[in-house]
Amino acid sequence: MQRDYILRLIEQAGAVLRRLLDRVLARSASREDIARDLRHAAHLGGLDLDLLRLCDGPSLLQLVTPGGEPEPARTWLAAESLYLDGLAADLEGAGDEAEHSLAKALMLYRLVQPGPVLPTGIPEAADRVRDIEARLARLSGEPAPGP
Image (cartoon, rainbow, N blue to C red; front, side, top):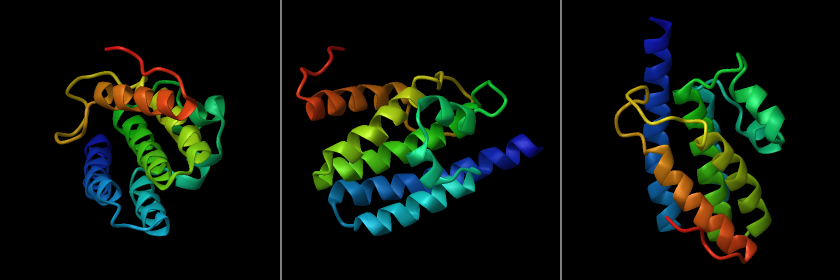
């Protein structure tokens, strides 16, 4: 019962993030509006965007996976929030901020295994991993990784 409730909240957060992705890509939202919507989506999953941004890798893992085992939907929500945060920073030309958020999103996406545990309509982690790797390579001036 509680797991169903959590998945419904993640689905709601996913819907917020899908709409926000469209706005980020269209560059029709300010960074403040994006941050507000990201905070709202993260909050639906019991997460705090500001903490996600501040944590280093090990602290982020403890925050997102308090029991030690990643819960796929919650991990995806944290990763997607950081991905959109990094994407918005990248499109605005804030490379350091983009790298910081994207690197953490990449770490979290790599924890999410494909399967039926995520609600429908949620982008596959593998797709995001490829996109983030290419963005991070571009931001650091390295050649993009192959398929």
